[in-house]
Image (cartoon, rainbow, N blue to C red; front, side):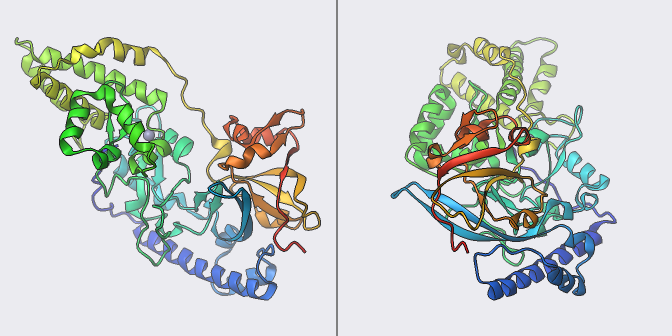
Length: 476
Ligand SMILES: [Zn+2]
């Protein structure tokens, strides 16, 4: 990940339309909140609420067009969270679901040709997150840094946020599908103790590093021995500048150990979270970086040999640290910079790099051809797994039907039968639940999530979950 200077947004004919579309969504959102509040007052909290014909008409009369009405999310969700810190108990909360489905956003306004081309040019055809140049083999995505149709919390999509950023130039990047779809999805955590942004507040404090407004090298650097990204911010706060330099430049074989030791103390590292959320250490990417470092090292050695071609070698070498934009800006610039800094420091200190057996270690990384990460179109961040509870069976121990809710599925229809309770897939209590498939196989929730294609899994037949559930909140 490197700092990107995208510059001002290109002036194309869609600018005015983008402003209007954002205004319309903001007004509609306010109307939805008003309608929700009104209805909740009438019915009391904790009841399934859905968009009734009355509300539909009311919204329509206030200028909300049909195409938007079709895509609004309106209702509520009961969420149970496993409290693991002190007492083993379930806590419940009702979350309003008010916002927009992803279908409401017009890709012609945020990913039209001039806009996408401007992003591709500014980023030299490289992914904003993994720095892989992808335009030769893929179209790439116009990616929203702050997700346009809500963010993921406890594996359930919270639809109320970031619709106002959908058409904002500063929120758009060119990214590869693997970073964007397989890894990032709608994951957008904010810093603990801070407030989630609304359309009328300033932007919130994201955990993910924004390459357009922050210097990613303050948070993430690359180990020249392993080609892996590591959280530099963790080291920055825990070591003196001198110890930091000694570690990073002269003893890269100790970096992982120090990172792990510091992380074990419970520090929150934006660098570590970003590496994890974007999958920056996926095997395919590590292999590509190692390949580049091997070439770079060979080029550095060639540059030391005087001869008629030395100038050309020097020039080629310099291109590996060219920040761009331009045709010679390299992939994995940040990793190349880190490797060159370490090699230089070691040669100055008389600590030869060859003690690490550079060719053998890069060859080992390159020789392993990992399969590309599995695409996860069927379990995108927009989807969630919920169980359905009928108002007349609020027993603590139950067998419940587990349902897979696709991102654009209308919740209100099915909610007529009962309550959707989002399954918190990160709970440590999930060993108390057992998922039974039609074929009789038993899985825990974590195993289910780890399953390659949960959606296919659900399509195969009814999936039930057995476990302990506290009585339903006011089920009448
Ligand atoms: Zn990428």
